[in-house]
Length: 230
Image (cartoon, rainbow, N blue to C red; front, side):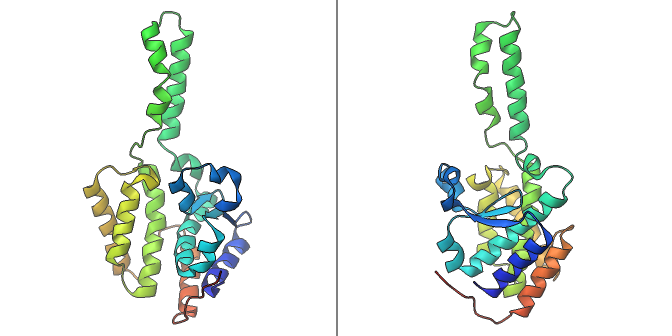
């Protein structure tokens, strides 16, 4: 394992008692998820799930980028007053509750006609559509700011490729189209990148200890080739 990845894992385990790393290929319920969900790194609670062991160990540079990004979610999960998962899944879960309440009302109030009752059963599907989510966007902006900052620290700039990747991510199915307007998403990404490039220590507020540790790891191993293993 590359020492940068190893030291970051050690830091997270020492400071977050529930922190762990898992692999989706080992868990039956992950194998039931859509292919896109299985291919992405995901944080649930304090556990970071990578798609496969082979991918994680073979490309340690990518693993480090992904791990830093997901560690921001771990820190936010530990520190945020609002439960991270509830905030992340807004507005779908709140709309789903409203939909279920509407169904209950439609089927318990005797005066509601049948042509209203039966269509009401489709309301949960309406609730789960990819609605804009400023709450999810806020959390992912924090994590992607750190991703950009790592690239800035390693390569001296935020590359056009990184900007395009993040733009596609926040407008695409990966985050359930949490931003509908591509123009607005473009402005968000460019503002993030410009701020990171303008400030050497541009990690998001509230995760300074993690940012300082990542900076220490990068500077300590600057110039060291990335290890690859199987």
